[in-house]
Length: 151
Image (cartoon, rainbow, N blue to C red; front, top):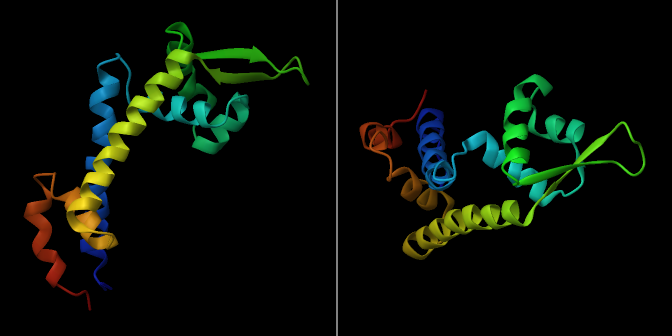
């Protein structure tokens, strides 16, 4: 399916993403954490030993904007910070068993949702996105845009 309707496609992506990310948000909030903690933990778990500098560069976050989140993850034993064996001035981050367990729980919830939607609608990307988006009340208000073409 090819659409020439950026308004619809942009809104479709927004609502689909919102459903996808809220799946993990609801779980991580039960641990007293938020989306930024999830993002940090996800990156650290996937790239164990990542330097703080590289983590912040990859995530496009300032050092100032990361301090509180990384501190909480360390304080609550989701991650550990070590000195690099190559340069004692550099700090590297690793997930703990507790952090890895939480990442697996969050990933499973999102993967299960994605697989359930694929089973329901198949592999057509627009159908998948529309099914994700249909979980958001606001999507129903703008769904009519699908049939409008920008000129």
